[in-house]
Image 1 (cartoon, rainbow, N blue to C red):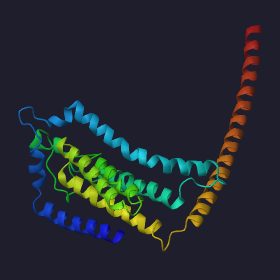
Image 2: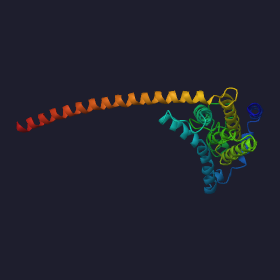
Image 3: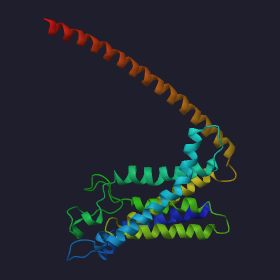
Image 4: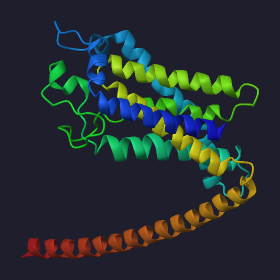
Length: 277
C-alpha cells in the first residue's frame, strides 16, 4: 500500500508539475469557470450555504485527530499510565498533521512562496500579477495561494483511513481522497486557490503520510513498547522541568514580594515623617 501510494503521488507530482509548467494558464481558465465578470467576484465565496458547508467539512479532520491528542496529553499528565491508543498510531496521526498541513503547507510554502490567490490577480478584478506554481516571489506577502492549506488538511484524512481494517481500508482511503477532492474543489470554486494549488497540496500531503506510515507503522520496524517508554521518559523529564520552572518562578515572586513589602514600609515611614514635619 505504501509503495503504491508513494509511487502514485510522485508520479502525479511529476506529471502535473510538467503540465502546469508548460501550460500555466490552465489555472486561469479553470478559475474563470467560477468567476462572474458582472459582479467582479466569485459568487460561491459569498454564499451562506456554501460557507456553512465549508465550515462543516473543515471540522472533520480535527475531530479525527482529537482522540490521538487526548491519548498523548493523558500520557504526559500521567506518565506511568498506559496509553489508550498505540503510541505508533498517536505519533503517526499527530506527526503527519504537524509535518504536512502545519509545517510544509502553512509555514514553509504558504507564508514564503508569494503566489497571489485567484481573487487577487488582474484576471479576476484584482491588482496582482498571475504567477505559475513554479515561480515563487509574487505580490503576496503572507498566507498565499500555493499550496492550499484546507486541501492539505482535508487530504490528511488519508492518514486515519490507513488505520482502517484491511477489508475496508481501500474504501476508507478512497472516501478520504474523495473528501480531499471535494474540499479542494470548493477552494477553487470560491476563487481562493488555483487548481494546481490543490493538486500539489494532495501530492505533498499524501507523500508525507505514506512516509510516516513507512517509518512508524511498518511491521518490520514498529515497536510500540519502545515508543511508549520513550514518551514516558520524555513526560517525566517534562514534569521535572515544569517543577523546577514553577519553583524558580515561585522564588522570584517571593523575592519580588519581599522587596515590594520592604519598599512599601520605607515609603510609609517617609510619608509619616513628611506629614509630621
